[in-house]
Length: 126
Image 1 (cartoon, rainbow, N blue to C red):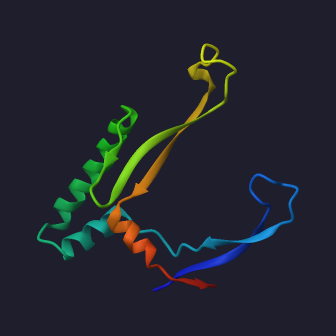
Image 2: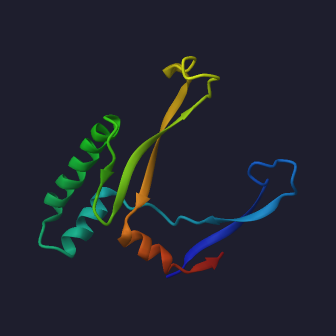
């Protein structure tokens, strides 16, 4: 099945004076929650949906702990989660303080399995 997209007219990032252009926007149909994931995993494996749900919930509980310790979390061929920072700049290293840090951002780098799936995706304009 093709990933559906629509078009949105926007300013060019980094050049607000440039003429507006049309850009593709992926359309999301709905969300899949942990319960649905656990049932689907149970359907294709020998693990019950209750056990699968417990493991997924545990992952959700411990993932932030590792990330806030400054560690990246690699989940095999699924991918890697890590934190990055957004901050204001300082003229010198001595002038920089943690007060200049605006926020932490969660980044996900897909693993081989997901990258391979994404490389074969087709698109359909709606």
